[in-house]
Length: 236
Image 1 (cartoon, one colour):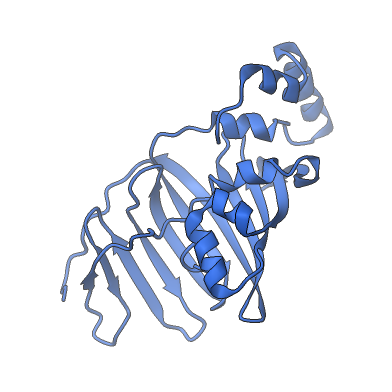
Image 2 (cartoon, rainbow, N blue to C red; image 1 turned 180 degrees about the vertical axis):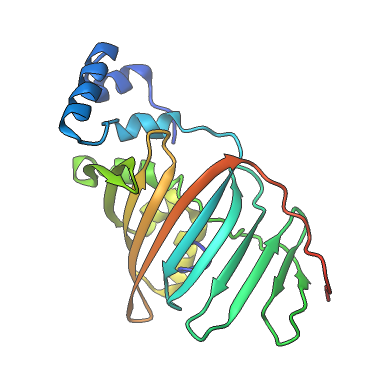
C-alpha cells in the first residue's frame, strides 16, 4: 500500500514463444490436461504481464494489516488519473473516509462533526496499483516463479521475492521513497496475477520502526472506469 503501508514493458514475440515453449496446439493439450487433473489452467506470467491492458478500469480493493493493523476498502480507477472512494477502519473503532475527484480530495471522520473536509489532491496519489511490481519480480528469474494456484476459484500465478530499494524504485518511485523515509531495508512481496496480467492478491512483509508488519490486499470486481463525484452534505 503505497501511502498506507509505508503508505511491463512488452516482450518480443520470439521471446514469448520461447517462454511458453509451445504452439496453440500445445496449449490446448495443456489446458485439457489441467482440466483432467483438476489443476488450474496454466498460463505464462511473463506473457500475461506483457499483454495486460493499458486502458483505464475500475476495481474494488480490500486491505488488512499494515502498521496500524486496520482495514481498508476502496473502489478506484487504475491506468488513469487516480480517482476513487476509500474507507480506513482503525482498531479503535474510528473510520476515516475519503473521496478523491479529479480536482480535490474530501475526508471525513477526522473530527466529531461528521462533516466533509475539502483538501488538495495528494501529489503521489492514493491508488493501490501493483502493475509495476510483476515485471520486477519476473526479472529475478525462476526463483520468483512459485507456480499456478487457485484462489477463490480463480487460476492465478504466484510470484514472490525480496525487493530492495533499487528494485522498489523500478516498481514504484513513491514506495521506494517511503521505504527510505521509514528506514526499511526493502520488503518481501508475494503477488498473484491472473491470465490478463492483473494483480489479484498481494502480501507485503517488512519492518517499520523495528516492528514486523504484514499487509494483505485483494482486488476484485474489475469493470469500466467510473466517475467519482464530490460528496453531498456539509463541506468545510
